Image (tube, rainbow, N blue to C red; front, side, top):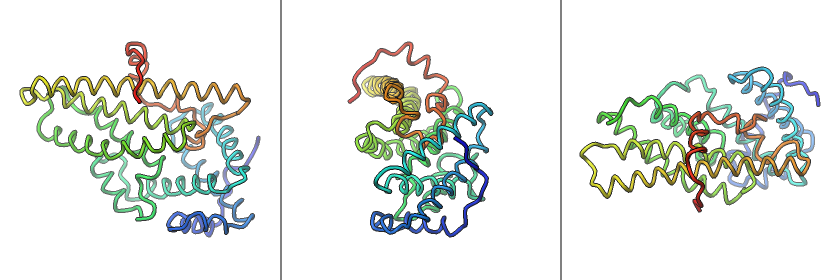
Length: 288
């Protein structure tokens, strides 16, 4: 399949999508979209996706494959009898693009500063916590910040940061769980759950080593909770593999949810190098 990724759609199309995104009655707004405008939205999404892919660190072969698979995912969305899935995804991608590539967004800032920026720059009708792409960005920011923490035990300042991270992760838990219930076959949602579970385990690891501040019972609780979330991350990883294999067995070029990773296989996209070690050394369990 060939398609130009470089023709910039007219700006009125972006205004149309943003108006739907900020609407309190999105379904009615989507139903009023004309056929030509629906195609313009598709062109805008493809253009923005290309910009994001070009800014990624993926190698040329991966990028070429991603473009092909992303277009296949987009074709599937735009061929559904309902326009709701396509336009909903478009709203999320454009919100992600507008906020994450905002001139004032400092991607090197700490998690707390990033979340404050997101809170200030997303509307009441389209909170960033409802956006799968932005949620991925925040989870990866947390992952990288935890990776910069020094050897344990943590000094007081970093312990405060870890407490803030755990508070945010607790707020995310119901959202991610609900996405999983709403779309159990969406590989990107399971990918988010995998990262979420891993970073929770990492943050709990720091909590469990607060030297002299925990009772034996508290320390045991944190250690067991950490193991639970590590095992849960492995379960998510295996669910992704199973869904990908199932899609291939049905002759589908892409599994559900690949549009959110812009055509990049989430098993490749996972930044967690330790996950393979966890998978080898952690027995499977039910985390339901």
